[in-house]
Length: 207
Image 1 (cartoon, rainbow, N blue to C red):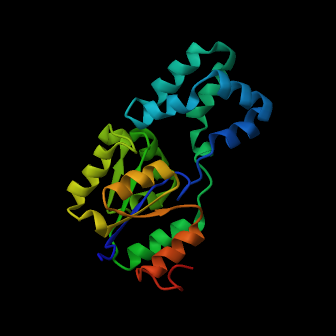
Image 2: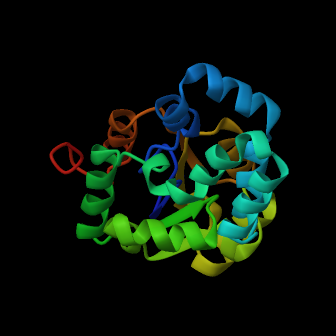
Image 3: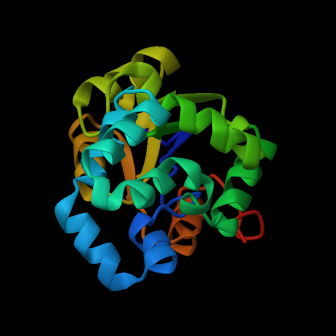
């Protein structure tokens, strides 16, 4: 059985919390948030950015189509860094421990090109990956098998050598189908335990 040689991180809800509903609950209240999300396909808007659509133009164009919610929708752009927060500290420590040990680390993330570059100015650890496979740059998103094929081709590693963690079951499922080792992320403690079990980090390194 091939032991994982490289770790592939999702970012949203693995290294950085991504809960737009929570942001809007604080910004406009839960009732107004529920109405807005029911009336406007905000996640579809964000998925367009993840596929490579320009960030500001996409958000503002959506806002213009919904005058009743225009100011609120624009917050998705104007206050985006508050939405992509907070950092998940234990996960960031695991990334640092892997880097310190010389283990190759990659990101495989549904993220806009503009937003990833912006996030990296606030979260320096996003520049620590040996390679970041960003959907907005590749014009491919998880769980499309094609984006996983790009990772395999660009890293030159066999699928079984890649240990991938992601919080979404559908993304994990495609990776498993391609022969990747996987960990369905439900918190950093569980992933830390997996890295220890695989012999990649010691208990102290994973703390």
